[in-house]
Image 1 (tube, helix red, strand yellow):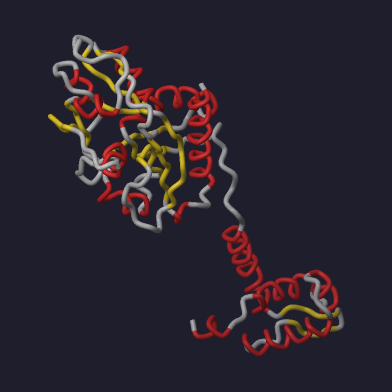
Image 2: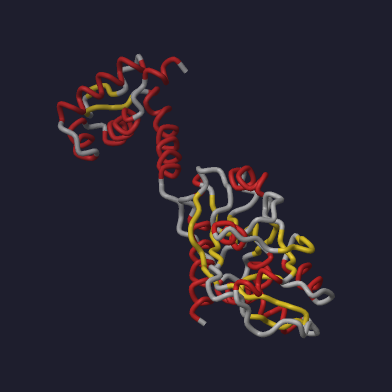
Length: 308
């Protein structure tokens, strides 16, 4: 180990050239050095290894037994270092059998995932994707440890460690849902009418019920009237069918629930802001070709989704 700390590893490249060629000039040309620089390197190698390495004979320079013993091991070491330093191979979705793990909101899982994954399987037939719910308290550590690859669908503005990479994904207008049997409410709500209604709110990822809607209302000095709180859109939609309460959610999620459940869509106040969703990743894996590919696929699908 002491010798290794003193050893310039570039000398291994010159050693391989010298012992392979058994000729200082040809070895110098092989590695694009001057003859004098190669001669200096040979002297340095002789000093460090305490061996002449090349000895002049009637047949020219010949390697010593020590040099011949070292040569195949040096070549192997150089090949290993070369492979280690090469950039990662391009990701090939057509042949990969990688399992990706995505932490997501139920918006991504319900609205996006089925269509996106069915299209993805046509080009990446062996890939597997696992979906998990987002948990803010473990999001950073799970990303860092590679237990999840991406967080998709988190509302912009959520509190996250600053070192995580947060990128815009899609922005979607919001809609309201009410029980189809609720005849006390029309098809369009003004802001005052919206605030008069009972509401089902959602816990955010930190256990709070303030959302982008509530932050917007707070800036206006107004609040909603909650009668219940749910952890996901599906539970809230089912609850809405049995009450006179409104739920406010992304438009495509509203369309889906209105088809599946006895719910009707109600236009929210025109000034209600859209919901902005993000993709979160860890800088440790920012150059991973597979993660880059996965993120690009989700981004591209999101752009096609909002153009429909």
